[in-house]
Length: 378
Image (tube, rainbow, N blue to C red; front, side):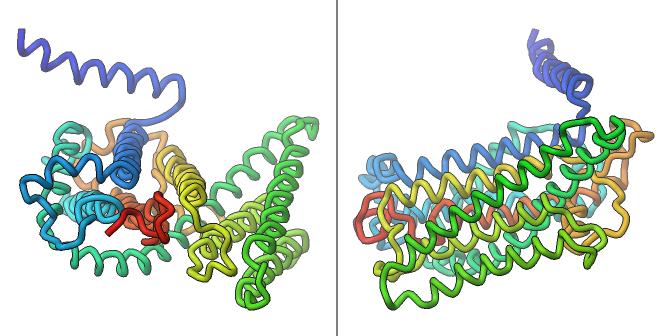
């Protein structure tokens, strides 16, 4: 009876995966990546819980003297709990990346399954972080700020690849339909929509961040971002670059406008920054999570293809996409020597985990209680 129950779980998973393979055209490798995406989503969910309700959750433990080896009142909750959680996720992905270089049989089995054990492992690492002095995470916070820049560049490359793929696929459909498909017109429509959103956001940025006469730096950054968008949109419409794409330039421009806005919302100068209360912080976090979710989902679902005359950004994105050869067996990753291909993916997920520590804490200045840009009273 017990043996039957042990087999029922894996059998159910295999049946569900088989349905997805046939209906959605996905592969076993995609399902593995989707599972890691779900784990990361769970981490984001608990990160928000720790950020907004961590104090209430940790109060019962304070009676036992449990204070995360720190003298700060919020050493176990708030932004400090988010740092500990994302650090645990990062350690897990780094471990998986290092093990993927070993080509061992046990890693192949562990990578393809053992999801309950993986969740237990991450939870155990997180519990261990509660015994690390909070001073360590002050250093980790500064480290994460610089590492997150690398992630944002890679995320930009993912959006470039996404936009090129989107444009190429719809252009092919248009050509195969003897130039009668409406999707080519939709490319111009969406490009226009993205540009309108960028322009509206830029105008609002001037309103939000340049109210005072001393906000010259903010005005320069907004204007510089707008100028860049106009320049590379103009370039994409000319023959200066062979593979110019209006859709790509509009998406990249929107992404740059977002980065400009996100950066200025962290400006400590309240005369130039109107995004300072708790409600604004929540909006920033939700928008950031949405953008990261699109990028991570694309990495998990997108099949890697050989692209001629690739740009540097597309080459960067290609290294972390799933490389699937339709002529190979679906159980390719059960073979020895294939696990090394997962190394870039795991390192990317580790970078994403570090960036989440900045995203969920608004780069270390999350304000959820309208208390002078601090998470909780100290």
